[in-house]
Length: 108
Picture 1: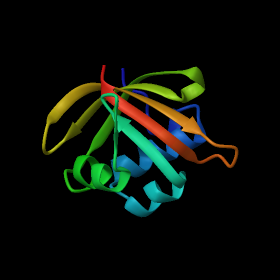
Picture 2: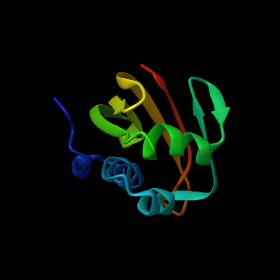
Picture 3: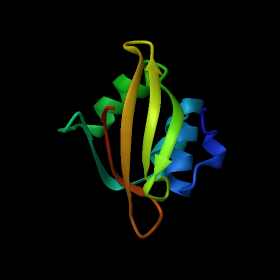
């Protein structure tokens, strides 16, 4: 059963998922801390290039199946126009200001 974005436990992660699903780049960037980093399948990626390709230009969408670590780890059915749907895991680091300083994703 999918967990609605508005019901996710961590406010920063909730805002991240909502921004992805709304294809709202401005809201997405607002939830990220300055200098935020990310990795995909264990390899660090350029955040702007990756998010443009995997989320915004390909209409990415997150259906959250499970959350743990207070909402900072998710199991997601992620879909976009490039890859279709895949089961992925997402882990978030939230800084003291409540913004995401790093996220890691990969196949679940």
